[in-house]
Image: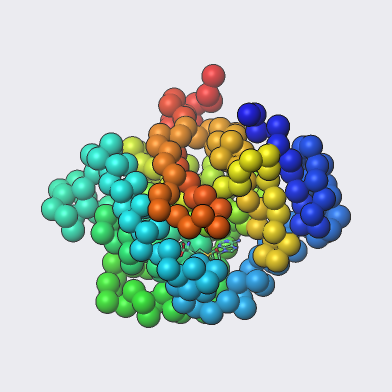
Length: 267
Ligand code: SAH
């Protein structure tokens, strides 16, 4: 199935045959991208700063989610041969950033096991404050930025992994592509962007959730977005042991398309 074969469903439940038609309808429902993004943040503003809150009432999936992610990051780290100083590596400090980090669930349960320093980037003040509490024991191995992903100041060549989980769903297609391009410029050589997201299945390519203005994309659609951003999929795994009633979850390890690291255009 190609990316355009399925249906595109807007926040009012209307079905379209193309992304362009769907986004046009969505723009008439919620005028202006800023308002669209704002509605997503307004939703999260009402959510309690707990694992259960950031997981939509499914804190029970957190251990399995973190287990799947650990296996996935282990694979990527083996592939690039990087070892943190914490684990005895001698190649310098390894750094990661968690975008839309919520209350630091993934930083604590995953990233600090692989990276020496982790930046917590999260737009909502009450989540950042709770993340500071949850990660206090790690001292200066964590730093905190209250920032939306599309405004996140990503310095060039700064990170060994950029982790983005359940967060790309808040960006419309064009913003998503631009954001991933910014992320790519912020990777150190031999590093990866990691995306973990819900995916929709059967004959739906994209579906907007009116409650939090998030968009669930099919795996095919995500791969098309990654390609548009000039990224290669170097690893793709789907999360196992996942409740049947939830959207399936995929993990992607992405790297700038071969030949693009130095700024040259892909063929
Ligand atoms: N990644 C975390 C939290 C997932 S919940 C985890 O897996 O535990 C979704 C998160 O996306 C929330 O923390 C919410 O504040 C954040 N978010 C929503 N819109 C965002 C935006 N525009 N930029 C960055 N983060 C955003």
